[in-house]
Amino acid sequence: MSQPDSRPLAGIRIIEFGQLIAGPFAGCLLAYFGAEVIKVEPPGKGDPIRGWRAVEDGTSFWWRSIGRNKKSITLDLKTERGRELAMQLMAGADVVIENFRPGVMEAWGLGPDEAKAENPALVYARISGYGQTGPYAGKPGFASVCEGFSGFRYVNGHPGEAPVRPNLSIGDSIAGLHAAFGIALALLGRQRDSESAGQVVDVALYESMFNLMEAVVPEYSGAGIVREPSGSTVTGIVPTNTYRCFDGKYVVIGGNGDSIFQRLMMAAGHPEMAADPRMASNTGRVACEEEIDRALASWCAGQDSADVLATLESARVPAGPIYNVVDMFNDEHFNARGLFERVEINGRPLDIPAMVPKLAATPGRTEWPGGEVGSHTHQVLRDVLGVSPEALEQLQQQGVI
Image 1 (cartoon, rainbow, N blue to C red):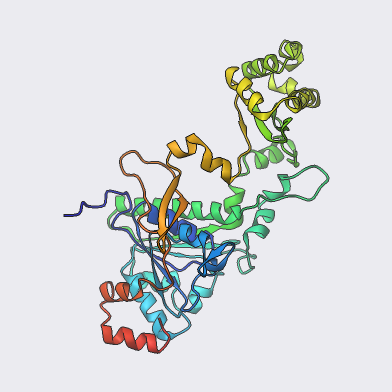
Image 2 (cartoon, rainbow, N blue to C red; image 1 turned 180 degrees about the vertical axis):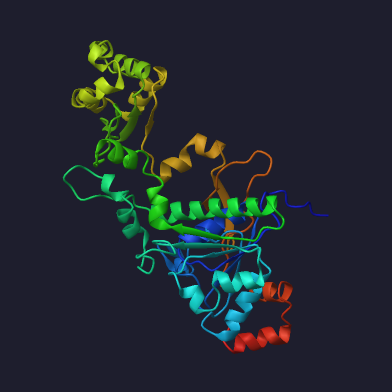
């Protein structure tokens, strides 16, 4: 007899209408921690992310990760019958996730007002570029554009040069995290008050990135300071920088605590700077930033990265390498922490990232990798909605599924 699922979201049913990254990443997180996520995709090729970047046997490796633990069904939402079936699924769900342009779900008759008329307890999560209200709500909002609009891109890069981006769709992923958090909050609120209705969770990509901006707003409001890009450093905190070593590899050094700075400069062969009263506090070190960085850059340039890191570890100074994916796979700590989960795709092994946070008593897990388009359509429509085999065959002939 199988044991009941102890994961915290076991028993929660989620209908995911999102495509590409933000909505599907939120669904992936929630599925990892036990939610039953039914992903609705268009018939045919399904979610476009199935074909993005590196592909094997017609499906991207990325999909195997972001589609994990999800039941994939196909519905043509441009057909009346497809929309009827979608509404029936929503009527029996706890959560809906969608990341279409505002107004698309309403045009299909699947917006929150229509859904809550059928299911008042429904939590309806919406992810868009600029949110569901305001003068920019209808604008297309890809992560790259919204990262710029949020203020995040402005502080990234080197002074006088074009702002840079990480080689990741960070705006989408951060929005997905906010959506998952908002959904968890809404479910908790509903659980505390059995008579409370569900609610809309409105997540904007630019607002999710804006949420990361630390002291940028109060510093401007209170002191008129505009945070500028500062290359590989952080404005107002010294020393924290990235340095190139003799072997061509880079290390990150964070020596900005007062006592840590003293240990760092002693280890780097600069006892005079460790004892310099000008550099005894962060305020003084900010004024001496160029002098400190020149000394550390010169020291690192004369040694291999492994020697630099060994010296700083002995001195109890926070420092580390800049890893690529090969380094991650080969690192004992990544492996000891269980950050890779092995799945099987068509008889071949594939490693996908484990998801965090780590819960001691009710951890998440990968049950299966992202499957093929519509691989659960018949099962879900039969078991959840009671659609007969004859009706399923007819829906397939009509192109609804």
